[in-house]
Image (cartoon, rainbow, N blue to C red; front, side):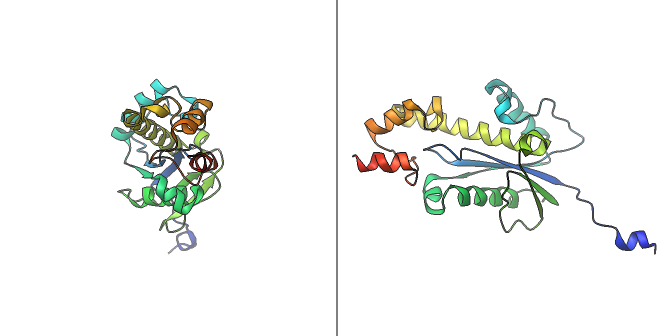
Length: 201
């Protein structure tokens, strides 16, 4: 046996990219996606979801689902965000998304500087990874589109808040609606503007 064979390091074969959408809103879940791309099935036009138009994200969404080796979107709901805090809820969503992938990755690359515990594989954090790693770009698109679609659905039940426009973010229109109507079941009660709205009811 050669010395090279003795000391060769294992090479990561399946790389999953992980990203989230919706840490900042006052309402709705945080969405976390994990994606393993297939090198044999290219997806032209991948980019950070924030750099893409809504129509481009919507066009890429089914392509990613069709051509990826594996993908998963997890929603962490407001009650769990309130219980854990937004950082821990996001990390828990990342863990769930990765653990649900089939096939399972050898390496996970996560946008940001924090990785969840209990992934059962190697993990790397990449600040600005959604502009560097294609699998993270794909995850950012799945997370963003999935969450935006959900917020549009919530708008049908709670039209007074304008979720279809601001997607739960603390815009002036949302804050005004929150003051007028108070929070609904999908608002994050641990977030200061929602707490303040509850106190004034």
